[in-house]
Image (cartoon, rainbow, N blue to C red; front, side, top):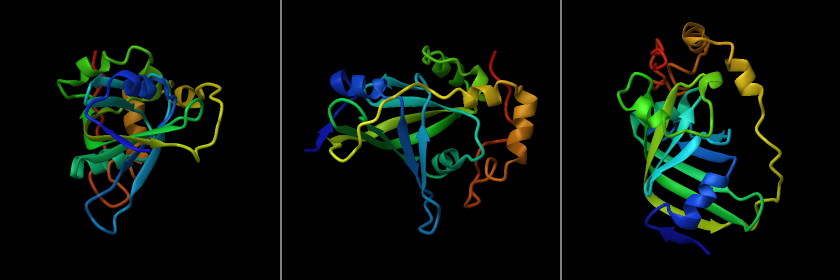
Length: 195
């Protein structure tokens, strides 16, 4: 049924790169803290950097739980489900970090995302995940569903923002600079987009 892999290559890498949707799970160290589970879409917003590292674009939103948890403890799990084709679930358990717009690594990392234009989405950070455990399992109970395409709502909403108004948007949101559990979230003021 389930199998453990040493690296993200071949069939496994192709499977991950084909999926239009994945999920992230993080949690604070506190036993009574809020566990966070987030769906992530927009084809091309996740890339496999090497055989043990993936990265995804972290876009504007009204919370920053993943960023806060990663800043506190680095633990993260990513999961992909096959909604078409063979019933497969892949999980990458690992350590992640948010790379913010003022980080010297940001520009080079951003250049790896060639299949998506991040400009209209209010890009906040790039999340880099180093795999510690890579597993697949059967997805027998996952329903068959058809992918019709990405929604354009996020891009339409945030395309009208510049760095100043985006920073104001994040500042007004209760759980962007600070998580639901009071952990440091997105550092504000937001650094300008790299040239």
